[in-house]
Length: 90
Image 1 (cartoon, rainbow, N blue to C red):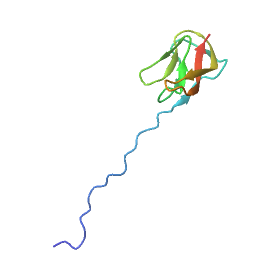
Image 2: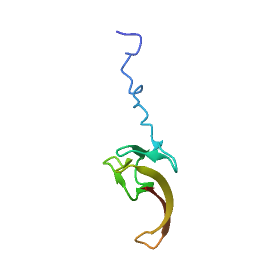
Image 3: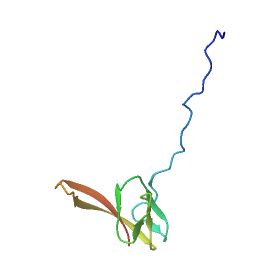
Image 4: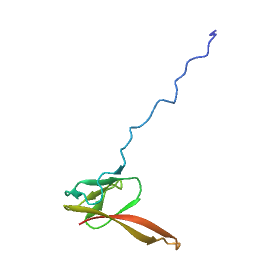
């Protein structure tokens, strides 16, 4: 008969690598087509002119140009107002 408790396996010790989210290019910065502008989860920033949204909500430039951030007033279906930041490449 054992005098010590059996050493079972632990459920701890697993973690995923960070995804390096955030803004990658700033206002008035020149960008090329296909360059990533923002990596995000959800749509905190919205795609404007010459900007496309990827499957994982990443925003990237679809044409060469200069980045402009603008504030846009969005009205939700229940009437509440939300101020969203849109990104344009001009």
